[in-house]
Structures are given as C-alpha cells and as structure tokens.
Amino acid sequence: MKIGIIGGGYHGLVLGYFLSRENSVVVFEKEPEVGGLLRMVKVEGHDLEKYYHHIFFNDIHLKELFRDLDLEIEWLDSLTSVYINGRFLPFFKPTDLINFPFLGLLSKIRLGLGTFFLQNYKKGEKLNKINASNWIRKIMGEEVWQVLWKPLFQGKFDSFYEDISLSWFWARIFAKRGKSFGKGEILGYPKSGFQILADKLKESIEANGGQVKINEEVKGIEVIRNKATGVKTAKNTYNFDLVISTLPPAVFKKLLPSGCRDFQHELGKVEYLGAISTILVLKEKLTPAYWNNILDPQIPFKGIIEHTNWIDKSRYGGLHLAYLSHYTPVSSKFFLASNEKLMEMYRPHLLKIDKNFNNKLAGYYIGKDFYCQPIVKVNYPKTIIDYKTPIENLYQFSMAQIFPEDRGLDAATEKAKEISMEINYLKK
Image (cartoon, rainbow, N blue to C red):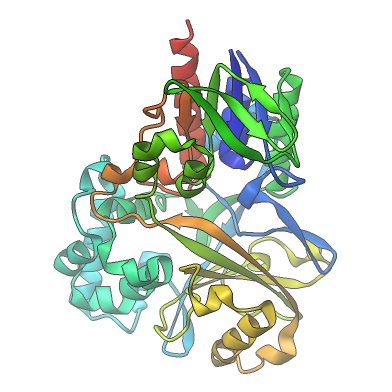
C-alpha cells in the first residue's frame, strides 16, 4: 500500500517507522529537519533540545522502541522541588510531604490518599466526565487545591484551569509511579539527546524503502467523492492509497477541500495553548533540583527545569542550562512579545527567585510554538475525531487524540503501533 504521511514530527516518524515495514511510505516535512518538538537548537555552541524531554521508567513502549532502534538510554536520578513563599523545598518522597510547612496535617493525609488512589486506578479514561478541580477540592481538600494544584493548573491551562478533566490529572499522577533510588526519581535520557531518536526513525524508514521529504510542505489533500487520493505540495502532486495527517487539527483542516466543511467544523473543536520555551544559559546553578514547580501565583512560568541538575554540565562546557516552562494563549502579551521584551518581563520574577540572577545569566534562547498543549476539558473525548476520519482512506494522528496522556512519547508510540496494525489488517 502507498501511504503518504503529512508531518515529520515524532508522530509522523514513529507511524512511518511501523508502517514502512509492510508498506511504501512517504513522509512530508516542511522544515529542513525532522523531529518537530524533539529538535535540537544551538545554545552557546552546544546542542540541546528546544523543549525539555525525559523518559519515565514505566514508558514500556518507548523503551521497546529504543531497543528496536539500538539506541541507549541513560538512567539518572533526578530531584523534584517546589518554589513557594520565596524558597525551594524538596517535594518527591513521603518525608518531603510530611515536612512540607504550608499544608496542615489533615491536608497532607488527604493529599497522600488522593494521590495513592490515582496512582493505583487502572482505567483513568473513565474519569473524563469528572471535573479535576472539583474532585481535588472534594477529595484532597481546598487547602491542597489552593496551595499546590491551582497554581500548576493555571500554569498548564491558563484561564481554562477550572475546566480540566480528571482523566488528564490522573494520567499525570499515574505516570509518576516510576522507580527511585537515593533522593529522587529515575528518569531516562538518550545518550546523544532526543534528536537521535528522530534521526534514527528517519533512517529506518528509508532503510525500509520509504522516503522522508524535508523542505516539502503539503498544501492540500486531494479528495474525490469523499475519498482521499493524494496530496499536493508546492513541488508536485502525489497519489496515495492512504493519507495520514499528523498535524494539529486546526492546521489539518486547512488542507481539506471546501466540500469537507462538516469534518472541518469537527476538527475546529480541539483547542490548544501555545508554549514558550526559554533556555537560560547560566554561570551557576539557579535551582536545587531538575524539576522545580513554581507555586507562586504571580510568576507567569510555572516550571524551571534545570537540565544540568540532571545531565552533567560537563557535556555543555561547564555551563548550567535551565528551561522556563510557560503555556499561554498565542494571543497573550507573553507570546506576542519580542524575545528581548519577554526576558525583561521575566527578569523581575527571576530576581525574586534568585537575587543574583543577573550575575548568573550568560545568555538565553527563546522558542515559541503555536500548538503545544491541547486543552483537555471535561468530556474531552467528545471533541476527538477518530483516527479513521469520515473521509475514506484518510487518517489523522496527533497529540490531540492521545487521551488521557495528551503529550507523552510513550503513549504516542503505543497508539502508532495500534494504528499501523489496524491499517495493515484492513489491507489484507
């Protein structure tokens, strides 16, 4: 079967990898490099992922893929902290919760019991009709919501923070059942960085006889009598037996002809937030941990992920590297600001965190992307179009459909396997 895949990010590459084993596959990528959100950027002469990534110990599908591709994962101990009332406190082990001074004893007990329930509940997708903020208030208590979860929900979903499904929250807690040793949690990182994963998938597709066409943007999908027959690019028109879009639904719908208005309307129901990834290049460390949740409601970024508190700084010439995690509407003042203006908007908050920040800063990199976080509201599955679309021979596969995990590489790998198996079964 001849299959055209639109998008050379992780979803397109991993799907192309599985499908190319039994089919003739062509992957189209508009950028000069594959990888999407896995791509590396140059930071002070060193290669670093544009967005932070890591592998959980329980990511069985992703670990299997690494073995298949003969790629090595380095497993390292990581630390987690929270920033609250002007200081960082460790927040991973049970003793950290016991010693946490900003929650009462009853709140700590309720937080522990609620977390235990979510970590051991096996069918989190069934929780999609329950509002997460209401559930947390009821089960864990108002104090836990106000002190701990509300700032993080606001940081993740902006003004939509009270509309989020409990299934999404379950997935975040359930994933954290990883193993630990020493003081923190074991997390995995490819020895050569995550770009090697994208590059290896591309090589494997080509080794299987497929093609990966970079610098070739798909401008439209050919649909005749409600049946997808191929794609158009600025360079050529290609005929396929099956077309798969891995683009965000809002972008995918623009490729469809005008006769597909009902389907385009359905695709428009999925809402996204944009993301700002700021990489700070520092002369000294900024935080005590790899993953630092910011619980201060006045600080716009809600995470500082200090990469070199996990991966040794010697790989980066002794520099300290930290990401600022900020999800925001693409219409916000932060997203629209120039890089220089944005850094000036962030600077007072960074000085609040560390009064010596200006002396520590050696440089920075800022990247912005439009479609980074689907807004996983209550009853979110009702907004998701099935992988097999209403148009014959047209599939879609994007992070918007990976529910309830919504952004994980492991879940994307698992779903790609399922889709490829379905397609291979249907052609027989």
